Image (cartoon, rainbow, N blue to C red; front, side, top):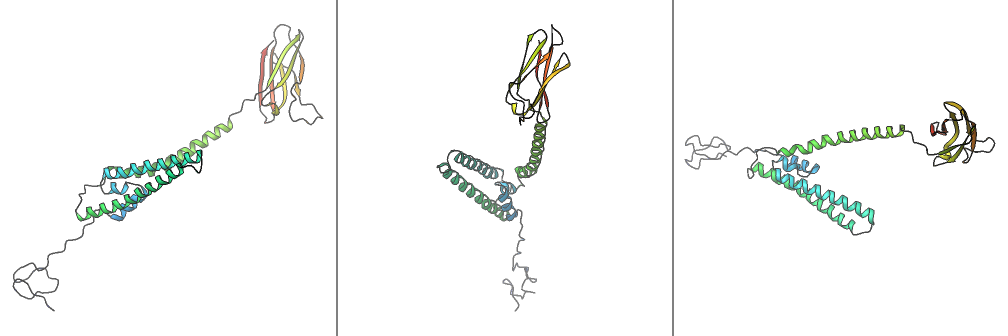
Length: 262
């Protein structure tokens, strides 16, 4: 059924005509094309992963900072309260405060997503101006890139530290004494120590030459050198003798445990 121009009454060429061909009157104003400057779903998804990111996507630097700092502060507070509660007492009231902080954090997170959605809608309707994404928009992007890099670097450093620590030899703690009972002899006595259980034998040099030693007595079922064992070695000179006592331990390492001149 044809429609007619409300001004001149002439029939319109079709139902979708916007102007009358006879008088030029506007019959139906053109429907403006919908322009979507900001995608509300993108804003919500960004806010889901990082509080404030959706606001920065919509160009609101201050709005994004409010949600970001509020979420960061509440998250730190919740973690601190939870840790304090675990250390002090699992049933203390601090855990209740931590639970409240988590609930508030959840509320801020949800409201941040809602706010980013409504802000994007207002921008698309022209109710709120838009001059471009906030410079803070790239902060979460940088953090997303930095976190794996920092984790990798930390793991690498930890591996190197543990490897280095494993290669450093532990200084054994055992004691040996030496004295000269007469001009021609030197007595070496094993006194024990923190690592006595791993000492297997003792060798003695006098002025660089092997002078003697102490080993685990056979047939007694011992696994380490008994404390109190001694040996008497001949003095190479009657004036000055440089005595060096070296211990051999069960892990295969050797260590000088006495260096003295008598």
